[in-house]
Length: 135
Image (tube, rainbow, N blue to C red; front, side):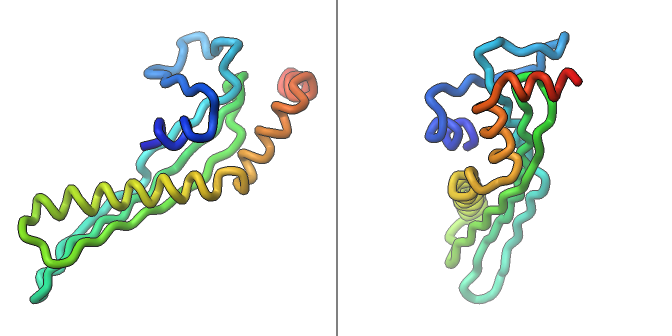
């Protein structure tokens, strides 16, 4: 989900499977987003209509090109389906809905996040960011 969301924001997105052992990144990398599921739960309401719901909270941590944490924030998504014919079908559907909503919230609030604002300001002044990190 986040690969797609980030691809709509940036010219190029590179997936890093594992943080480099020496903690140095390719000089072309200007930032690293580390999304992880912080909370997930779902349930079934077995009333006469029946419904399945799922809630997901993602925490995204942003690192600069030097591997320093800039900040982190959460986004939340919820999915709900009524009148289930099969529980397993409803579970998959509402999970997908919750993930899509979290992705939409991530995109909608991206430029408003304080960590992103700081990061973008640093990118506009790369020499200032490097001297602050070194000092």
